[in-house]
Amino acid sequence: MLGATGSIGGSTLDVIARHPDRFRASVLTAHSNAAALADLCVRFRPDLAVIADPALEAELARRLAAAGVRCEVASGHEAITAAVTGTLCDTVVAAIVGAAGLDSTLAAARTGKRLLLANKESIVMAGALLLEALAAGGGELIPVDSEHNAIFQCLPGGRPELARSGVRRLILTASGGPFRGRTRAELAGVTPEQACKHPNWVMGRKISVDSATLMNKGLEVIEAHHLFGAPPDRIDVLVHPQSLVHSLVEYVDGSVLAQLGNPDMRTAIAYALAWPERIEAGVLPLDLAATPPLAFQQPDLDTFRCLALAFQALRAGGDATAILNAANEVAVEAFLAGSLPFLGIANLVESVLTELPPQAVVDVQTLNERDRMARDAARRILRNAC
Image 1 (cartoon, rainbow, N blue to C red):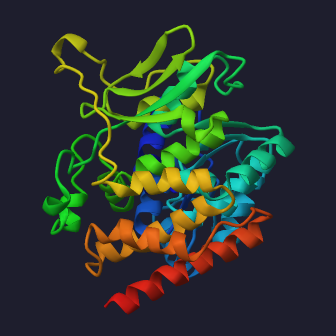
Image 2 (cartoon, rainbow, N blue to C red):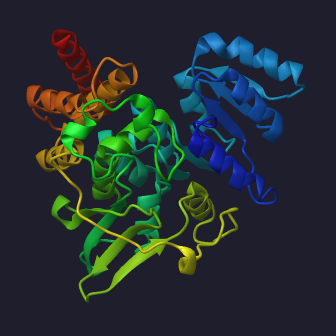
């Protein structure tokens, strides 16, 4: 479980705890929350606990010893990568937030294990490289994002060639976030606290801001392109405020298949863990008779420009999506720190995309260097604007 102390980690461990005869969390990792990781180790008794920050390894070891937990302790990103490639697990849930999860996700793909992908930034940055790693390792990738998991459920075989399967369009749904329906003028002064109050989902601060700007949906469009081999002109986005229809697949015969359910990530996680079977996830049944009418509308690309920028980067090809992702991470960090206004997020991303035209994706090292260049450019633009 990569990212065990995050929201996806908590939901995954909840599903695992419901099926102790079937699943065991043998490896738990966290970025810097040693106390929370230790508490999880007390409950789940893994064989290995890894903290990304080496300065916190001794604290983690002390906490585990005090709690009487016997498990191996390690630290650093290399230790996380070693954990996913070792023999302690046969399934890897990749839920590390941001570009930091790229190396471990690629390593898991090369091992031939089942990879449950919740780190969308990895496939946004390095979709072609991730698919190559999966092909070389012979493993399975099952998306955990609710939208892509829904499409996976609505496609025969999960990830077929769209043309041979009679698919016309993939339709991703978006809640619209906390600012749906607002004008640009109304968004000028919104605060990080307002942006992080998602109406339907409980998520971390970074992904909550991405949802508020619709960048999260843009990243999901890029992810769908790689996961399902769909060109940009066959991927659409519809705003669906109720978040009950998680995505749809339109076929050439006029059929539209949709996956519905309450907005709870445990549904997608349970499906991915047990696929092709289905298991109980602890999610309340969807009572359609009691739900409000389901509404759908086109996204406002003029107000929420991040979604348009994501489509632009996808069409540009090469490493443009990696540049987009890196610039967005810096922009969101600055917004949360109070040094960039909400509407400035899209402006900063656009400036970096303009400054760094796309280049071909060659390997991880080159991609990481371009990621660094994009972050440096974004920080320089921010400094010059102050």
